[in-house]
Length: 152
Image: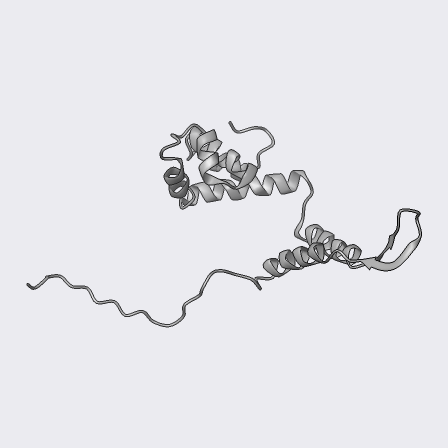
């Protein structure tokens, strides 16, 4: 399934994946839904969620997904800078007050503001900066005791 448009990195990783795994990765990038990607790639509906979860923990799958994402970004000339600039422009435009007109076209003295657009753009910018994360980082030592024998 390696096409001429793939980068060298992606072509090298393909050698370590089955065709079904490659298809899963390509399908996964459509909607980021692992279960549906597994089904579309030909895995059983009964085990698709388990298969997707298992595959998404494999380094070679994640490396291939990363390579495919890079290929997509390169082919579309998408850069982090371009995305961030677009979000900032969207915020600026959405924050502009727009006059409200009645049915005859007369200004009512009221203005609209697209707060939900602004909030979403700020949310995406914040995520990019790592401000909103569900991950919890633990620091410090973790004591582990290994018990070789169980006593009754």
